[in-house]
Length: 211
Image (cartoon, rainbow, N blue to C red; front, side):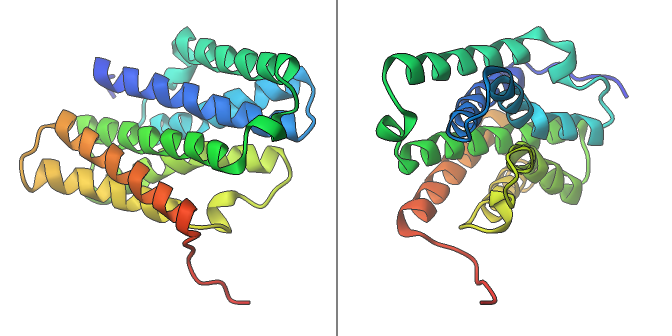
């Protein structure tokens, strides 16, 4: 399959990578990983969703493995978090859960936008677009949690995958039903995911549990 070059998509993808790498590096420091472990966790957690997205779209090798900037922004984010933890003090003192949640939320919004935008560029079906965008948004977090021996956050706490699904659906409807430009739909979808996820965190919304 021919690769589609989309500079706006690349910019959003790199910003998502940086944001998620910061959040994953913080998780790595709190999990008491060594420096190499923190860097691995930050890279895998920040690009994992995008790698799965590209493989599902038939784009090989995935963007994260052919463009050095993905590794570069991941390393930069890791170095920044490690430096802050060394010079400012214990992470728990200056990174309350809400701050980490905001970074995670921003990364989710950007990743969903990137996944939806790239799927639209490739012209895949509506169902495939929603699935790929959701995987793009949640895949890295699942890998992060597996590497730190946790039940994936997406499967146990508040709205996460649900919001990713809704954000992708919103972008899809705006573009294919109402003829909104992809850039405008991306802005609307990103704001929607970020706002709804933030409210879910603050209000402690969650799907029903069985016990």
